[in-house]
Length: 464
Image 1: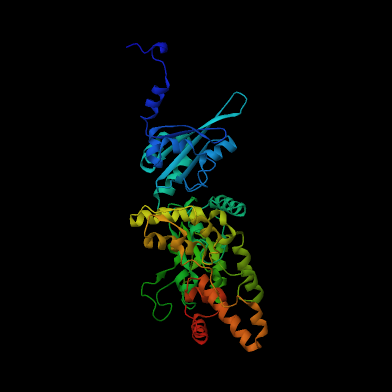
Image 2 (image 1 turned 120 degrees about the vertical axis):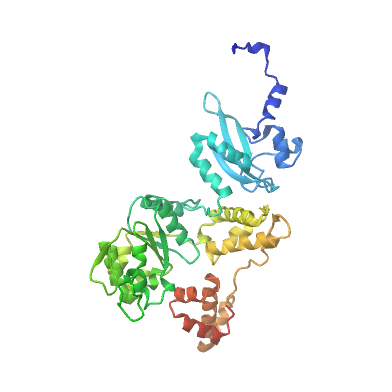
């Protein structure tokens, strides 16, 4: 068979190009250097649920502002940077798409036009194996569409968080001890798990331990284990500690600020030597465990107060990572929100999508409960909304917390006794709000025993 066709016998007309473009699975759009639409195939009309005239009247720089898509378009980025762009987005009709934009440059490097190919979720998944040159970007993008556990971990639009995440990426390749600082709900355990997953230990156990949830008199036996007969009530065969259970993997010590002072010397010994001795034992067991700790408390102040060992503080602070609260990294709020929207759409079988007006509400709210509160909020509106299009009306319950001190002049005008009660009440209400009403975590945050917190709540007549 002769494949040397004479192309003059088969001219490429505009009609032929249309026929070709309408027989591929991609939704193809072409934009000029000003962002005006100059071509689209028929697939686009179905995807965006509009006429050809309406599509041609739109400029890619205005698509987000006009509610045509849920974020700034990839084409707009491509025109500005003259570089290839791959991005996940959602149309106004709630369709998940993956967009690939390629700039077409002239001989002098100037931009001529941009070709955008949009793939709906199922088609995109089918194509990933054929696009090996972009496999890393595509894999990250496909996770945002299909992985219910994806939390945009180790990725941020915030400059300070980019630096923190770069340090986390680098530290993942070592066995160095890490401590993660941050308010409750910012995702300290998520970061610790991500570091573990990106380390050489990722095939071994990741063992989270909440130090605040273990009674102080039991924490030594829980973490380091005991030999049989070590104390009354001990198991006859003894018990392995959590450090032994985490051997070859990673142990995550959350709320390390609540670690009892009497047991801190033994923890320091394990961190420095890599060996642990069970209670009642006479031999140390050599272990291969990486330790990541986390706290929402100021350990340095605790050292000054004598509540935390100075040598342990410096041993933990080899690589400190400080996660910003969500109100200080507003650039990331919509990424988290879209991630959780995808998660709960999949979980509950919905096709919810964000209206344009919802972004301002989500990004200006202070989020005292941080990412945990955002996640719960998205789940709530996915379940409770009447329509697939989620608007600010669905966030009617999302109000800035009021702690009874809006008029601070009243505080200074009141008698000292009344002013102290007013402040104490507002302080406890604020702490409870930050911990989603969790008594134990609130007690840990403000540094009192939970029994005392219960008494205070009752005395001040506060509804948790």
